[in-house]
Amino acid sequence: MLNKMMLFGLAVMMPLTLQAADKFEAGKHYQVLDSAVRTSDASKVEVVELFGYPCPHCNSFEPALESWQEKAAADVDFKRIPVVFGRSWEPMARAYYTSELMKTLDKTHRATFNAVHVERRRFRNQDDLVEFYGNLGVDTGKFNKYFNSFAVSSKLKLGDSKVRSYGIEGVPAMVVNGKYRITGHSAGGQNKMLDVVNFLVEKERQAAAQ
Image (cartoon, rainbow, N blue to C red):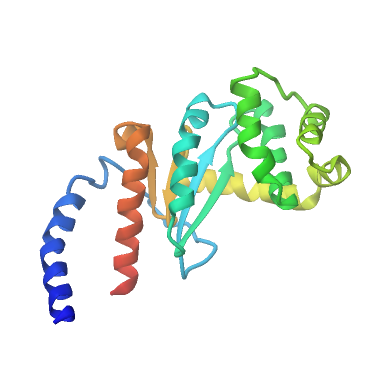
């Protein structure tokens, strides 16, 4: 009896799901990349945020993204890539990758946004960042060691390569499974970006199940 009821419920829900899906269209609410970019784990649906600490829109988007990340399903592989749109952006991108390697992003990521956009601090070089991150409880010796290391430089280079492959011209932007690019402009506002992301994650789940 329970199985029959469940099947009936799915049959009722299916048209509603398709109807909801119709409101997001390729070329309008999101862009299909010309060439798919390889993801890190083919068994999961990869979701990548492209951001920059100097970007005020990224800062305002962060609370909603953090809430979404906390609720993301186990089959979603969420990643961030700090973009470098100019020379002044590189130190903060290096700081992100350094903190990622040190597993201290819980201390530094949101705090860096706050420092730039609330406290109006300017991080011009490595020394500025070392001092700030040290005050957050990060080991400054390790931070200095990693900052210009081969590992961080490699992450920076790979990130730049993906930014180009994704066709990123502004941030924040998101890419789902190396195939679809979403921006605030395409989605109809920052508050709708994650709705489009959720739709595309489900689209990829269904494609993998076929």
